[in-house]
Image 1: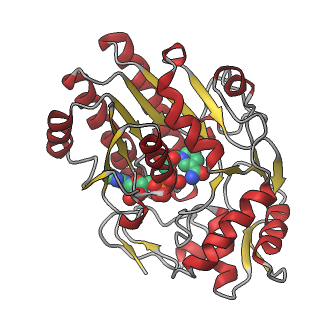
Image 2: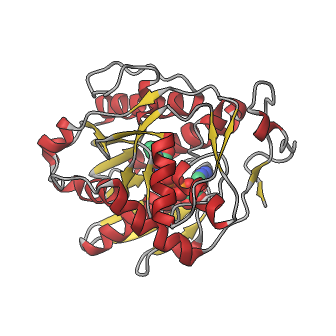
Length: 344
Ligand code: NAD
């Protein structure tokens, strides 16, 4: 039975990856500091360690104890738009934390594949649909951090032979998503606003486009990827194929939630206007479901879960490092406290 570490396994995508690994017969160890995830997300049958990937001693001890066969690294703070204003926290959590895991994987010597969840944020302003052949040019600290870890895995493989696979998902939604984080997860934000009886807030005119990915179209291929050593060393875009404007998304979410449309347009924020990816490579090399889950089907499943889960009080990120040029709706909430502390 292979033993796999899932970092961020109390979060959204990580908990689904952990569940799929358990179904595939892995022993699963979850490491998560519960900064963005919750304990009930961890699937039954997984061993849970509450801790921070930035805690090098803890990471080293965990690798020494479990001698992992596979590492699925999903722990990160994935608030792309906020990352400009929390650069130090972003690079510490998302780069240094990743380096602790890579070092431990090399030093332990048992890891057969290190699976890293990057993002299409690495492509920045590239013309969509973005393909894996493009040279990444991220335009925000979150994307820069993801690309830095991708590059680290490449040189670590060249220097020490650590096998790896990189996935670049985009706009993933589904059951167990954190719907109470006001800085990320647009589908979750809309559903939470509807549950709270508030209008859905859209930055700018809402004509920016994104392709939305149902969780099963992302978590299952990530979990199963290690079974095919022929794809080690490869990088894959993964997720939904069809691009929608944010206005179209809002309409689809109102339908899924059975709610009357109510939208509040906020001033535009600094963001990539059009971001969606090409998935030909994933379809050619991974055993993917040939038809990704349609938006209406995925939203209906998530809406049923969200109604049962109930409204969440939106969190505020305290420890903002730069408040200048923040969207006014975020600036009004700035609390200079400990980095990463999230309060209701
Ligand atoms: P999530 O917040 O639900 O899950 C991340 C988990 O990591 C959380 O449970 C959080 O508590 C944990 N975590 C964060 N920092 C940690 C630390 N220092 N130590 C230990 N645990 C820590 O987010 P998600 O949407 O499930 O994202 C999972 C991964 O997928 C992330 O790496 C993210 O960058 C990437 N990703 C997500 C999307 C998306 O649309 N959701 C798109 C592209 C890439």
